[in-house]
Length: 450
Image 1: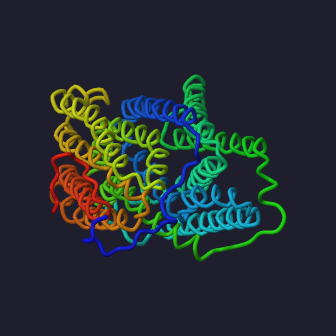
Image 2: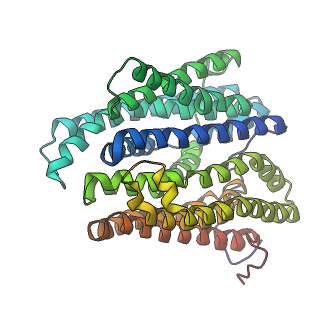
């Protein structure tokens, strides 16, 4: 380990997947690719049907739901994944009960607080109005956010709890298959019944799909005899739980602000209603890059954790180089094809979206570089350096919002895309440098950082 880094390694930090899960990771990989395939097709349909303005409203709602659910979880989803397997090994059933009760309760309380806050904004809509002509619409859209945040948060928490009980493969079934499938069935039923397919209809269908996923999770919990772990005496170790969960929550929230903050800022500060939809379509067109990266991480995460615990430095370096190489093999052709056929790609979303083809090029370059170098972040987290992974993400998210506030009013979606390029590349390079200084691992074979 390099002596240049003064931060201390947290031996209890980082997600800790269960051992012996080769078959389960293959199932998880399948569901991840299936989910993103459904997501891409759905976004194409929604964009074509709704048009730029309404698709922008839809994208704003979904961005706010994702950000809100991440905030109310308080990092509990990652904390359960880390501590529950360890409590299983030591037979500390009371600690499992305390951990699950604490994060269930905190999530529900924070959901109620956030819902009351959002509904208060709706009632007091005479306040801040950056765009008086559309702020009334924007503030009422938050009603849908208040409806969906608790469902989204509980589904995410439930997925991670299932993983912590060793059910990695089945944990993907509710939110990767059932939720999108039920959502599409509800939308298809609405179309068949000649109902008006609006933003409200689509988001309510998504809420129904997420609720179906939640019901399936409850069934899986019963099959895993989950109740016996939450009944009876509970022991609470809130301080170590929060010491782990808060940095993880901030890291995840900051990353989601990088991903979805531009859409929120465009809704508030963009030049017109169509700009949000155009930017969201360009961002959606690059989602396959994230899908490839997440799929590869899903498969390699247990191997990273095992090699880190065994202090196999040579194995970790070989694994890092291999992961970066695999991501590069997928990302490079995708970026090249996206840039070459940018007009044709945006035309798939419908008339009017071609204006965002330049934004698509910038987003493809930024996200392409980011996903190729992002394994450094994953290695930092799984090797016990969550705080080192946090700081570049936090700085990038803060810079993203601050620069958006300056450049979106001046340059619209082009300004938002340029800011995204800057923060995506900057944060990825920071992770590469920090991983090398902390553990001596190089994300790229030719990298020389001293």
